[in-house]
Amino acid sequence: MSARIRKHTNVNRNEEEDASSSMLGQRQPAEGGLKRHPERERGSAGSAVSGARSLRTTPPRTGGGTYRALTAPLRCYSYLNMHCLGILSLLLIWHGTPLNANAPNDTITDFSVKLYHELRASGEDDNIFFSPWSIAVALGMVELGARGSTLKEIRHAMGYDDIKNGGEFSYLRDLSEALTANQNNCVTNIANALYLQNGYPISDKFVQIMKKFFRAEVENVDFSQSASVAEHINDWVENQTNNRITDLVDASDFSDLTRMVLVNAIYFKGSWKSQFRPENTRTFSFTKDDESEVQIPMMYQQGEFYYGEFSDGSNDAGGTFQVLDIPYEGDKMSMMIILSRQEVPLAKLEPLIKGTHIREWASSVKKQKVEVYLPRFKIKQSIDLEDPLKHLGIEEVFGPNADLSAVSDVKDLYLAKAVHKSYLEINEEGSEAAAASGMVAISRMAVLYPQVIVDHPFFFVIRDREMGTILFMGRVMHPEALNINGHDFDAL
Image 1 (spheres, rainbow, N blue to C red):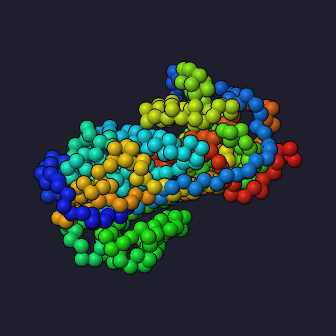
Image 2: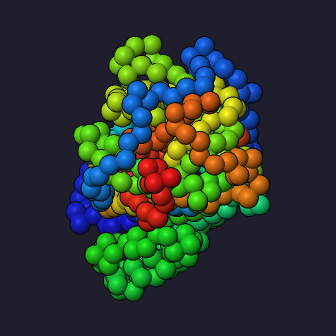
Image 3: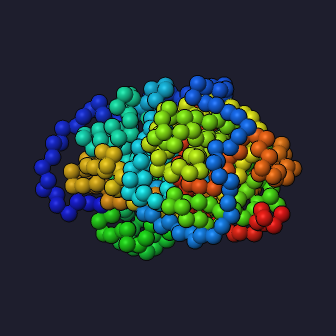
């Protein structure tokens, strides 16, 4: 995101500052540490059933079809397979706010779901992939510089209304540290940067608190040299994301009016706890919601995973649907897949995607032996967040009435751009010490265990299982094959 000076400076504004909603020059945010919320003991719930069966009504098919790549607007990178990257670029801000003991993760989850549905509404047949955590951190940096009604809009959209002022900053900092603390199994890197125009009067206190709560690297640049600044920022982003996110910003994003750019980058790489053996990957047919088919490499393994079958109590979502939670090595992180019946379009299931339901699914699935067929694919997306955020109620910061006075005494700053890039890759890589690593695909006619055959559109989240934090969220409508070098089932 980048900040620009308003060309019209004679806008009448109420200069009265809301002391209770501003952190700069007032009290410091609460220093309370992050409270971890281990998941409840997994077990069956009233809405969850399990059994040795598949929800398919027709067998998996191999067939033709063409792949249609997705090029949706947005800027944040996520890479999975476990690589995930999230990057968000913003145009300046300031402020702070605290969360109560239970609110932080639930609040971010609820915001994630609301944003997901906004993105879904803008592209009914598109892939979706973004990092709610990256966006929440970037908006936190913006919130740090906001005051008055601009601040109130951000807090309300994020769900912070019931949270003590300043508390969310401690939460965002502590959780970022918790996510990056144990690098033995999964690698998680979270980085923030603040680029300031040379000579522009930025509040020293804003910079200090930005460093304190967001560990932001602060650097002065000359935005009039737009090409060199864009190259410099992009180099930083590439370095923070293992070269998975490129060209986050462009020279055209900056002008003589640009005063500040905020960037957040998240990189995640993890190995499956139970690996998919490459020799078991086969060519499968993936059936899209329009009933067209595309050939993809389908990974396979039989092993112990967290699994459950759920029903919405009606036929609105096609009856029963499956939830599969696949842990990464170390069991801290996992990928949760929500899959409708094979003949049911994902659009019928998506209205059930709510924060409360995601938490319920996570606590209700139980460990059991499951046959898993999972596509090997990758997704790239670039998203312009301005319209989705406006639809969620964050409007004032993008216009001439924005109050970012905690950033600078100059009153003419506003948010000119909010972009998010994401990259996701799923493949076979995983731990060698997997319980099912030696399994060979059995005949699909012998259904000894529940089958999860992901050969049609699905929803997923990548989350911290201990704290419930969602790092990445999305859906796959059009899988992109990395390379199809497996064997066709008919050839076996």
